[in-house]
Length: 275
Image (cartoon, rainbow, N blue to C red; front, side, top):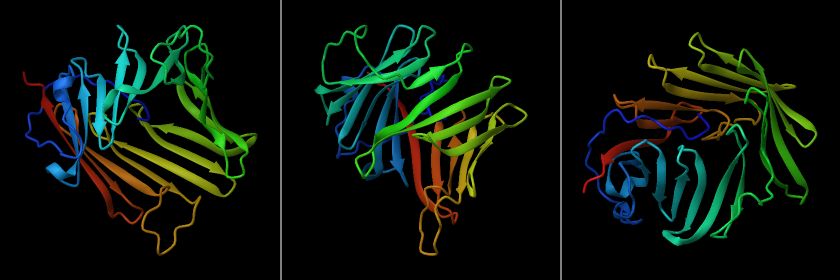
């Protein structure tokens, strides 16, 4: 749910669309199989917010939107090796995010550079994800940087497993524990709930699935920050609902605030490449 997933294209939904004039149509520059068009609120030229291009293997290979464009590059085994962020729409210049893996092909971290040629074998980068002998993620760096006082900090999550599923997580900020979370699953082994607590503070994530095991709703509830009568939106109390086409491709995402009012809505349409 937090990572990019490849999907098998069972059929292409052929729907008409218009190109938004605020960013260029680069379809003739990309070797793709089909593209996804994302609209906000309703399908119209002015409501187009981005276009995502996919390969024949349903791998996401390029994304373009208002003032951004980036490419995703894979090796012969369809493993993501690089993300290239173009400067505006010009891909002759930009910066690279290189992906590194351990000997078991577990993703362990990124390296950022403006250089066009890099020897990956000699790069010194900080590993941010760590795995056990079963190739299960047991520790990862969530965030690092400097706070308002200029003090360096790191936020980590550590995971514990039972029956090959995450059972518990502990989140720390430097040496301080900020959350202790427990994971719960339904009868189909789908993640159904994460309950995080520390003292009187709580955060609960709920996941609901369709009969075909697709996520249909994600809900989050928390008392970390107080909700006032004047609060129109809380980042810790909201929900997102999902609708799909018959072939499994995402059709709509609708996001609601803590009052159950619609906050935003994305509509997705698809087009295959035409010669």
